[in-house]
Length: 364
Image (cartoon, rainbow, N blue to C red; front, side, top):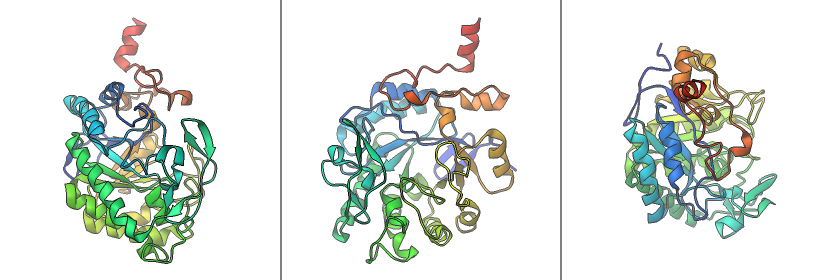
């Protein structure tokens, strides 16, 4: 069985190890959703990951509802991403852009209009806005005639990602965002070609993924799903039936890899009693399968040993440990990041965490 420290081919990307950096929203872009210089330092520090999956990055103004999150729809954004990807690649790293449309999670004060979704629903709780937290609004259902334009936004963002120097993209179809709102019957109440049966509810996922794969290559296209339990009010009554169909469709497209976020009953950042769907999805998806959520080194290696996973993505451990791979290799302590700094705009809690070598130098 492979070790976490063995290389793996993820489509067109030759990853030097199987420890991926999961997407982590950090809120260090501008109000215009343009990447900033400090983001190059942050990602460069973590270039030792087998592959970095970028923070969720908006495909359009309509789809981006997180303050200070970056986008990939304008020339200015593309130009500002270039120093970030170049910094990672200069250190031998690889990075893909996660493409994000938040759907009903967008507040009109950021998206500029009533949010859109599969159906006329509202997410529970409050939206993060520049004016503080505000209640989520009822979304309007996307019209069938609007969906080609939505798919075109994904394609444009994917092409922009390659222009910006990314090695590929990941389509964010998880965590209760737009594509997930179409996938799961708790949020999708449609009675047209995009609602009802699992085959219909996966249609948007399949069409977006196929269009992006056609535009930039299936070997540079990946997908993230969250198949078990509630995510921001989005859930499904029969996840096994739904995600078996989704896995078959993605396998037919031949994507580079599929990542699954699967919290457990004791999850530290969301929890559920719904069983993990990865064993089922493994039966229908033959490409590299990447698993995520609350892994430690031992559990990660065990899922590789069993054949359930081909790689593991770690999120929060990368926040306070830019040299996480080195720490894992020698069993060094892993630092914890303060949550108060997750989404602030400065270097504190972002680029100021020392490596092992820097800690040793400070101690000396």
